Length: 109
Image (cartoon, rainbow, N blue to C red):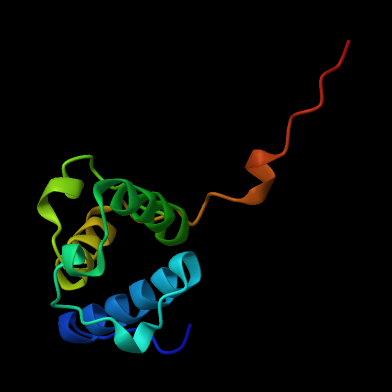
């Protein structure tokens, strides 16, 4: 995925670019034609399409998107700003969590 953003501005730009790629992947829209400040409604994005996008964001960014986000997000920049907040509010992953903890424990008769 490239370099890790070092400040809030870089994080926002990186998040917008990642969202553009996700939109391209999900809806086959050329990322170069997406204006981050343009309202989703100008792209004919209805509430169902926006809900589907939120599910794709949850899957790709490993965040939980609050239900009220559908009402508060009007543009890609709004979405990126919200997404940055959701990612920053998530608890850090524990280093002690390993795949071996997901392996079922053998049962003895």
